[in-house]
Each structure stands twice: as structure tokens, then as C-alpha cells.
Length: 538
Image (cartoon, rainbow, N blue to C red; front, side, top):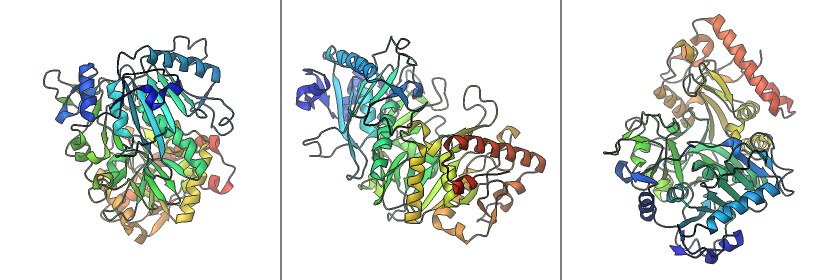
């Protein structure tokens, strides 16, 4: 719908007298503009395909939060949340506003919608952009309004995307580069310049929710979630990239609530988003049919390599980036709660699963955690990068990300860990650690990763309760409980000390990993002796 900026109240943002504003236009119109503006082409089954410019991922070193009185005392300042002054924000904000005011000859796109499926905690979001594909992206990722829901709409947070604007004075201002992603929490405004990457908008709102919701007693989580068909037995899956979070939460008998961002209130869990943002590098239609089948008209592919004439995609080609992606609305997943016509919500989780890909081969395929161990491993957020996954990574490398989402936390990790513990105890939720990586040998040995069917059997045993019928033994270094037998899984593989052929190498590698955990945890020590003692020891 074409509308004037003044009618939407954009003049209050300094966007004066804009006339070429298009609000919440149809997918068909967005795709027509993508093609007409030469931003992209039409590909697999009608999905749009675009390139995101020089940035094919987020630019965390260019993200800043304004140091102002209403939020400064609450923010977890440091490398994740860098300080920026009001003066610098105002200067770049004026530059962004000038760009919009001087480019009214081209369309300005506005998406008004919501972040948070629970109306009690939903945030009204407004995203303003000049590129049709960026508008398409946020249309896919946030919750789209139904008829009448925009009557009297007032944004609770606004992002103004000016990706064509760069900050040439960054050196003089003490900033990292010409790119800037700035958040003013008091004014409820963010501005983006110098990067086209759509994920900055998605994760920007996630960071805002990480600030707002814990102050209301709601745990904001970087996790996926699903339920049984009848809505019972909700489960949430935490895990960093490469651990299998999206794959394992996509289950033919358990509808998906969401694949990435959720909140946990005293009423239950709810999805923040209206879509999914899945990696498609090496996508196999037989192994991940839900994602493959979601790529159709209404989906948006980023940075994939395709034949110029046939538009056929080579999902194995990572020459542009290994971070090839597709965004699509949740209703593209038939087996989703949203696809069933219901809000993406459920009751309280009955099981919590921490996923890790341990390339050292030390963690067991599954272990049950005590509440204190759950806090320790939540704050640690461990996985390991494998050789070849990133430039310069030549052997297994431990990676720790607090709360399994460190780059998006705005408050101290302690706040989220305390909320997790509080809700686990209040709603009596069991927590399991599941290793989807290597068991019995490190990745550098040439051994194969623990099988996906085996991991699925473990997940099913956790969700179905069969694992509780097992006898357990205590892990020598990490202290958690390991089942002695579980279904058809080779019992030798369940405990790493029995899975390794070379025990001297096992103990040496295990001790090295324990030291990595301990060193990392020092940064987040809560002063809670029980949690500290629940960590690994030599």
C-alpha cells in the first residue's frame, strides 16, 4: 500500500514529507521490485535470489549501543556491546535521514509487524528500507500483521536501514569501519549503514528483546523448539552453529514452534519470529526435505551460486560464502505449529537439550545434568570448530558463547542464567547435554562423527522418557550422569572412556578440554560456589 510518510508519522523521525512510501506490500510486489531494480532474480520454484554485497554475514565489530542514562547501568559493556556517544549517533542519524529525504524519487519500503507470538510480550517493530529484498527479508522473518492489527499501530522499536550510506569518518570517530549498526535504546531506534546483510535487522531486534524481556522476568533464548502433534511435551534445543539445532528440532512427528529465537515466560514458551532463516550450504533435499521444500515462491535465497541461464542452484558451491541462506515464512513448513494455523506458542518445556559438536571426542553422546551443571554449561555455551569450517582453522578449536548466543546478549550472561535456573526449578524441567560431534576419537584422527540416526534415537529417548529408565554412571571429568545402556546404541559408545582405544590419549585430551572450560568460565564466574563446583575438574 502506497502511503505518505507523514501519515505514518515518519516526520517525527526526521523523514520529512516522503511521498513514495510503500507499507506492507505483497510478496508479489516485492519480488517484482527486486527484479525491476536489478537486486536479484527468480530461481528455484519461484523463490527470489539475491546477493548481499561485500557482507555475507553479520559485522559484530561494527555494532554499537548508545551510552545513555536509561540503559547504561544495565548493559553488558564490552566487545559484544560497544559504547558509542549520543553525539556520534546523532551525526550518523542525520546522515541517514538526509539520505532518505534526498532519495524520495525511489521507493521507501516500510514493514510494520511484530516480534513475539505471545501478545502479552510482543514488540511492535517497524523496519524502514530502500531495497525491496531487505523488505522481503523482514516480511519473512517477523510476524506479519493480520487484518485490523495495524489500526492505530505505534512502533515499539524502529530500524532505519540505509545500507548505501557509509561512514567515511570512522577513523576520526574511533570506530571500526565505514559500516555502522547503532542502537539507541531510550529512543527505541536503530540505524544501519554500510552493510546490506539482512541478518543485522533480524538479530538487531533479537538483541533488543534480550534487553527488554528479562526485565519483565521473561527468559529470551537463542534456541529452537517443538512439541508433539497434540501440543504436549514441549522441548527446547540450545546449540551453536553446526551442532544440529535446526535439523534435530525438525521432526516429522513433532511440529516446529520455531528454529532460532524464543521467550520463556511464566505462561510458557513463544517464538519471536514469523519465519525461519536456514543455512543451505550443501543442502540435500532427501536429508532435509522440509528446508528444501520451503524454497518456493515467497522464500528469499541469499548468496547461492546458480547457473546464469537455467538459474539452477549449486548448493555445494560455497565460493561466495559458506553462509548461504534462505528465509521463508513459518507456514512454508507444513509440520509447524504456525502452519497448523495456531500461534507459535506452547506450555512450559518438559525437556531442555544443550547441543554441542565436540570435535575433541571427550563429551558423551548424551548426559543428564543437575541444575547447577545446567547453569554451568549454559553460561559456557560450548562447541568446537572443525578443521576446514573457517579460514585458518586446521584442527579442533574450542568455542564458547555464553548462553549459546553471546553475540546477541545485551545484559550480563548471569541475568539469563539466573532466569534459566529459576524457571527450571519452578517448572521442574530436566536438562540433557547431547554431543552430535565425535566420540572415542578426535576429529583430527579421521574418525567419523557420531551418526545422525544415533543422535535422533537419543533425542527420541529423551523426549519419550525412555532414558529415565536407564542406569547411569558418573563421568570422570565432567561429573554428569551418563546412561549405561540406551536403546540400540552401542553401549561402548555411550561413555567416552570406553569408546577410546588409546586411554592415555583420552586422558590427555580430556584434561586439556577441562582446562579450556575452566579458563573460559573465569570470565563469567558468578561467585556461586555450587555452580563453579558443578563444572569439570581434573
